[in-house]
Length: 440
Image (cartoon, rainbow, N blue to C red):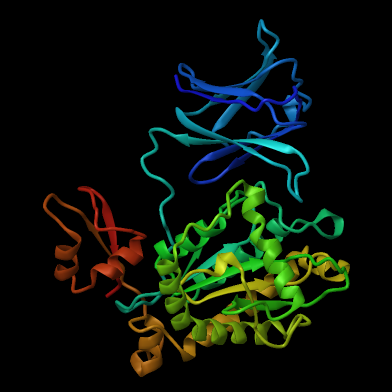
């Protein structure tokens, strides 16, 4: 049994709401509290449970039937009173967990205190793998690597982002656009998309860029549909990370608002990087800035075919999510969800697909002119592809004594190509594991 205790010396408070968010790496429980509160957490076995005790005569106000547990690690919830009148909440689990809890203060999205408990499976075989959406069987690679595009749907889970017309939530709109963009890239020979989130859960800002780097991405795109204090603000925008300051008042305001997302999700924005690290970061960012501006302009021009543009040039602002030093990175505002007219369009599947299509057109047009070295698109641009051909995909089952370097040498491919095709972060492999090998 694992026990965690957290004490806040304040008056007794009630539980006003409970939410459960399931991500590929953990489950998050969030309790809305009327005030900060003393609480204790422990786990039990046979069956697996997590118990949360709130001191004193605290009340559980939500209906248990309204707490959505479907498709999560949690299978049931019950509440009761201890002999000392403490409120007890018992969550039945599918597996043994390691809980981590924190108290979150009120913010602009949630005007109340929150108790957040993250549940990590103890015996999970691995954390969420860095896995690009498959290079499908009919894609032609000719032993040349795909261009990997990391697509980041903003916000998620506890952080809804902006909320617009008819309570349309930014997190839902941008996830649908992101998935459609991924679908288009998946079908295009020479491209592999990677979604930083595939469902309704929260990812800290720094973790989003880390995921893109771990996936060996050639481009990072963060997709949003934000709000501005003036509901008349309108138009699509593309941003790159600013070297000096924001290019407009709206840019500065949007960046500050987006950077608050970590506070909503319960992550400190404290920057612990020292001066040396930041200097190296700035030098590295300079090398990718030109590419970011170029691909950003290509996408902005295409978006202008279906949407009014907020500005006719790529804008600059200090978005934390764009601090990916070795990857060209963009933040796309598909429109202002605070503008009633744009919110209505953004809420429709038809317009979401149109927006995804133009983003796709813009980035593929850029890469057709400026393909990364060693990629299929570069090989194709240099005359290596003169028509359609069927892909002959190879697979190899690992035997005792095999290493990635030996396999690569045997099949005349690179270790990097094998890693990219199979979503492998390092050189560790297992006997019996089946690897996809680049097409011949």
